[in-house]
Length: 207
Image 1 (cartoon, rainbow, N blue to C red):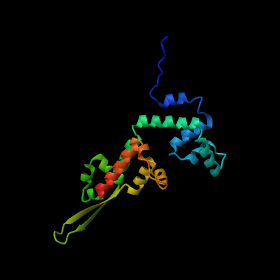
Image 2: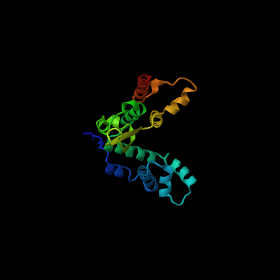
Image 3: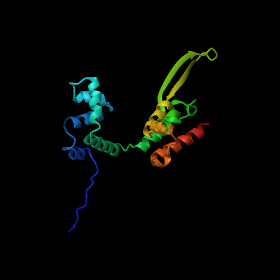
Image 4: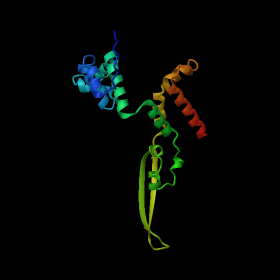
């Protein structure tokens, strides 16, 4: 008798809806869907689907519902769908954060707007904002109008980037563990090890 092969289709939003039509439903599903569109605010999502409860109750209700197996499974699959559709994963996020953390302001000093636009995309993304000021004055020498353009560049916060990196690689938890002994890197994932190596190399390069 020929055995049937298990079909594992590419997850799409439609497949996600069908797979959990009986498992994650009602308020559970409404809560997760709201959580994913409001910027991942647990309490706000809870109060959106449960407008009858207070802020404190919403916080507790959200914490409880997120521990339910059906909700956790639904969230994992929604995350996989988003990853597939956007092409964004932890490695890409960490690499971007690392570029922010070890960006060098001196690389931008003296550049014109045209030169800034010509920088590689990864270097340009380290810029949070650009403030351009232009002033004109009459030259006492040439008696002509002189224009001066000054450019103020603000890079993405290094501290914020490092904080985000620590959350992605669970650094704070590892630090708490290290207080009672050495951290066992043999149990770290390849992703965590690669980020640690990147951080070490970045520190060496900045010395």
